[in-house]
Length: 107
View 1 (cartoon, one colour):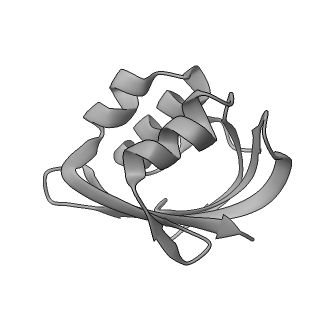
View 2: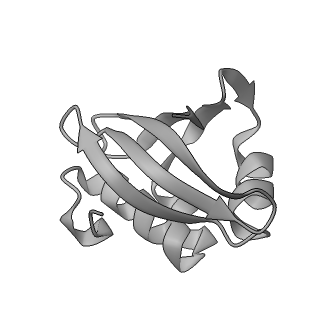
View 3: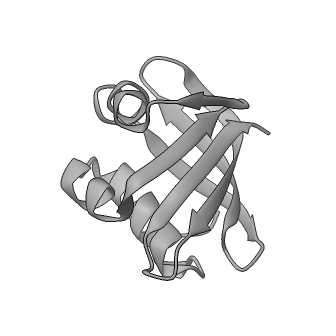
């Protein structure tokens, strides 16, 4: 497992840390104002999704591996709704250092 503090990309590192800390403010501060996301190939409303899948259900990311300069992760993701599953995450980071889009789904 890779500790969040050891992740290569600063935006991804901040994202994982915010999720694991349950810190909605830090999570949102790390996203571009018009950020988007998809889950299993379907676009979702990011803030509704995050509330349901992360913040109201105790979401947690155990990073198993990273690639593409730290912008692609394989994660053991768990929450109180679904339990634990192996997931993949890809992050798109703008020149401002904020995440403009992330895509997740089962690995």
